[in-house]
Image (tube, one colour):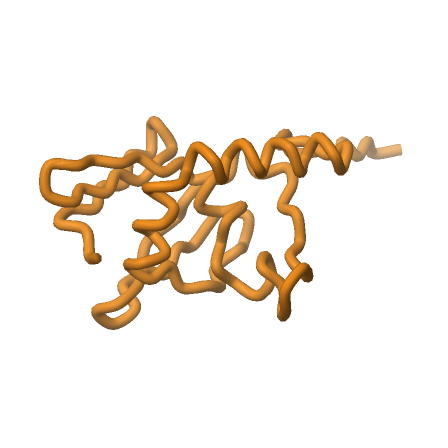
Length: 123
């Protein structure tokens, strides 16, 4: 199901999708950690890679992929994976459960949503 309207809200770091009278907001972070790319999902069942440090990820641009999907380009360099209309709708309808699963995976892995910045001093 293709959304009627897609709005990028840079200040609130989300994409708003409107389907008739229903409106959903998906955070850039959720979109990034649930990217449909092989880099994130893996190449088979159970081969997914937990995405960490994506709390402040930004969205640089959205590109149409034919009439069936969007390509999202993130500021961490990630730009693979096509978000087809069915997958975007799935994220909208299931984001609470998906988010809870993601937070649980992070906790189990001892990982964080925060990005790690490395400070290098000149000697």
